[in-house]
Image (cartoon, rainbow, N blue to C red; front, side, top):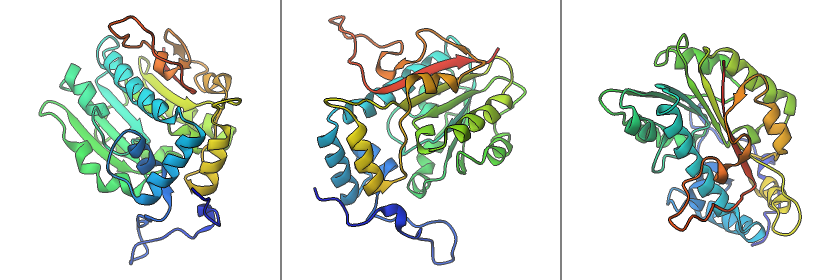
Length: 282
């Protein structure tokens, strides 16, 4: 596939007829829709499939990364709602609803779980009703906000969550869309500071993987042809975001290998260049 003649980031953001919420632009590939394509979903346009397929040609493991990240969400939430006893979840950077959304996994273990989703993607907003289908004993809410707007997120999430009690903060595949390392660290710290002792943080993040089959070229292509731009970080940089928290075993590892569901043949899952971790605030 040929690259587009100009970067989508050079385009003015399309807005609605009243100058309000941005319209969905089907001509520019968008992460939420491309990710949905990699997961086998249908909520995507031709531009998303084209860019997604070209990224996969440069970095064939990307489909495995997408599925491994989703598997990490399932296992992390099962642990949090089960062994860790979490009953409140704040999921920032939700993405398009698929199967096994956070509230579905949490409420399967603890039906009284309360979940607040946060995203500022107009594509996700269109599908937000699917994220609000809580069981009768629990509750869900959706906040339209940028991840950087932590004050607004915390204020609006307090309608559903009690921040005097432990909350599980989910930051899966979202911090990589913030380029500045200092801004990312400050964002995580503001959110963690608002959490009660006993709270947990679940985090996943792509790492830069060079060499044969690496993702560096794929990231460069993505940043020239899709939105929002992505930034990879090292495992050490990701681990630093959890400083001051108790990182649970097995630590900051490939998300496919965080407490994996091993197959019947005992074969461990393949490594993918996306790390995941769960940490506790003591």
